[in-house]
Length: 317
Image (cartoon, rainbow, N blue to C red; front, side, top):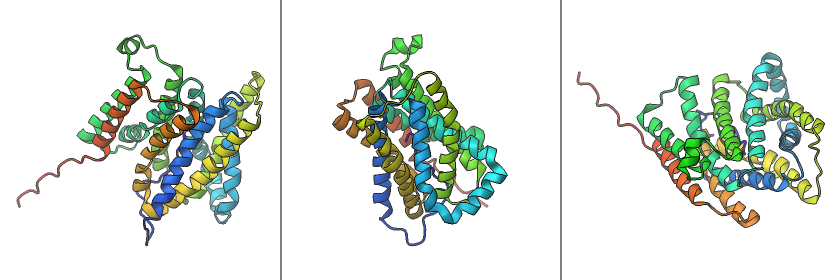
């Protein structure tokens, strides 16, 4: 969600990979979409940083025994590069998720899902500046078109709102979350921590929980205490279990069979699932500006990820 799962770009599918990876990936993004619904549902009963802290903590606790064979490598990485692990976990899990939960207090889950679809485009732009990866004409044009779509959604299709800089704070939180995810992905690729994907996820979940704890304590000191009833407990159980630990595990399986690139491209299913679940469970509908903005974002994604520059003709020797 949200804090979406972690892909190590450049990984190749395991030998003998098959169509079996697609059901795992589709279920992963369906469970991830459900987190938006659960977070919207639990918002009246749990403050955003509290939800962030408990989701990360419980998901980490569930997955920790599963990666027991990697505990030595994980401990070694923490000892040698603790600050880096903490920083990457803070950006990609604490800030990304906390901003989404804040934003959902003031905007629809559907709108949040559409804005988060910008994350891969933001990642490509940030990779240009942080990693020095070439952007190229089509990627640059795609990023601009997708950015226009985001502005349409944030301004609710109103040019006056855009010119006067009067925006819904909820949608600005979601934009911040999408940016955090893009930065996190780039920093993770640059760090090259060198351990397998699922143990790395567990470490970053733990790091994210540690960073979220002081934010949650601040909420408690300001009287924003959790008052969970049955619905809230069910929502928290979902975001930690099926929407947390199981989602990350399924993503890891899909990367093993499909490769990181193909598994990550299926992320766009999340936006569709969020809209569908929000309609069925929350009674939300798509606004006109959502549809227009989504069209721009899809066009930008196509330009940035599908179209390739024509190869230059080989020189005559």
